[in-house]
Image (cartoon, rainbow, N blue to C red; front, top):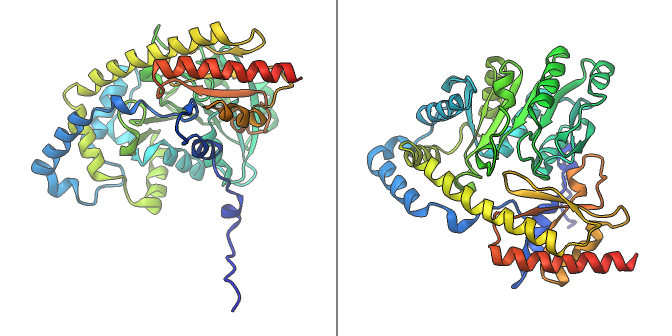
Length: 399
């Protein structure tokens, strides 16, 4: 009897495994220092506080917390989020917020709501790999704009919007401490993007996981604060509390919000009620702000350690960003170096990174890489950067 032959859908046939997931597999061997994942520092998870919150929830609200919930999410948590956003000048109510199973679900829902096959998505290069993966299953086309020290450039944006009027379905951005390069789009450039988006009736998807992890000066206002009528904002507890809880949110204008709720109903009915209750219980009395202040202090030290080590050990031909917040920085090598080909050499020296080309929808960026500084310790960062510098020096000598 012959083997069963699966007839997969076009969508299923199109999906590919994440380079980040594949890289993380090869970095599990003992002794390797990994700058690969976007993982928060696990030793900073507020385990005791979450235990107490979970116990209170189960003892006092167990019958509700373990029950089915509304698609929109636990009202008290949405109220807490609305209050936090209002403090940042983002004028939303709890009814504007939808709780999602991580920001990845939010990205998928936005694509489902807005993207048809052949629709155009405008974004930066590089941009967040997870967004590319979420969007690709809907078969869009991408138009990408180069990034400078201030994030996505806007030269030529109006011409592109004019030329493709009606077919550009979204401008997708991580405008603050972007994953993967740590760059932040300044206020005037944000205003220009929003002005053009409004003129050509194009929504802006503002992916905002990192704004609360600012180490230095004040960050620019959120794009959602500047243009509430056509910006959809995504936020998450993954980077400021714990990713394993899988709780994130979308703040969207009414018409978009209603469509997202209906799409989510068909996807999973609702996000984990218990996780929502626990996060609210933990956060409601200011403990979340105390926790964020603690992790910011640690991540800032680790960022400083990485930048100082790179300045000390890296060859002068190697360029890198110096982010003022978030979890990542970006490295650019001379054009003739391919960081995908270089990765096995790095692993031989027990250090790992994420090659940059998957962050480019057009597959360019072969000479770039993303480094994470939130998970490794300061001692690991120092040693890992030293090892990486040796890999770079050997690669530069070979060419």
